[in-house]
Length: 294
Ligand SMILES: C[S@@+](CC[C@H](N)C(=O)[O-])C[C@H]1O[C@@H](n2cnc3c(N)ncnc32)[C@H](O)[C@@H]1O
View 1 (cartoon, helix red, strand yellow):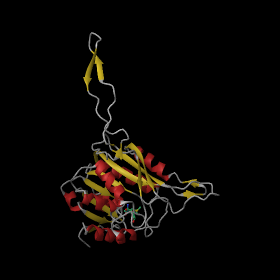
View 2 (cartoon, helix red, strand yellow):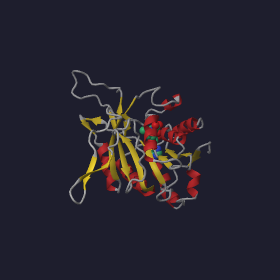
View 3 (tube, protein in one colour):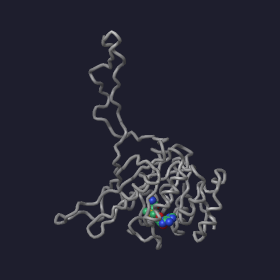
View 4 (cartoon, protein in one colour):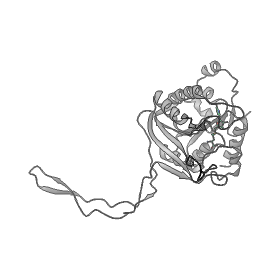
């Protein structure tokens, strides 16, 4: 079944068949700007080594939601982490948005297990960033014993030395335009203090910090109302901010848990190539419908 941006890969196909069909870099073209329906590990196994610049994704975790019965456990995570490491280009980045469920009074620790699991397969933990939400469906009660859970982790993982960083500079500087009263100086060989250069003025804006805040909920996460047919989308601005930060135009951006296609949509809007994967036909069709608008 082939729609506009849509390849149907039968997820019942066994690993062996797909292993034998690993694509070379030229054949990768058939996956570019497509949504592929199937189990992401099986599909990723068909990708060549070192072919992806950036992954921006959020896995299902701790069975918080039932995606048509598809489960994602720690064993599956480990296989996926290993495959992701193989397909990332040197210096490529994986942004992994994840949180924890509270069970029997304790957070599951799944997010930490994932971060450490990525390090075990070779990734560097480049940055532990926070996605802070403006509101929660379960605000703390005065008589309660737990503060409002208001954030998820955004683990930024790198294969080797990071190759792209376009830091977003939108933190306004209080001292913009001001110059220190002093001068840059250095002693020459005879010990005399000489002026070397003028001290630069404080710029209007500097790189933002690593806690990113987004307004969430219906009407805020996405400019496409259909996106909310998916129960767990992340804000399109979050995807865009990471895409801008860690990739350049024409790079290949992958979301192996594509859902409503937020990452692919923002990759497309920012002139990147994209590949989306989702095990649910329903969500593949949803993201296909949304992507066709752009
Ligand atoms: C948290 S949602 C991602 C939502 C997405 N970030 C968005 O903004 O729409 C996780 C998605 O992973 C998909 N999924 C679960 N297991 C999968 C697997 N093994 N392979 C591919 N997709 C899977 C689910 O169907 C679900 O749509």
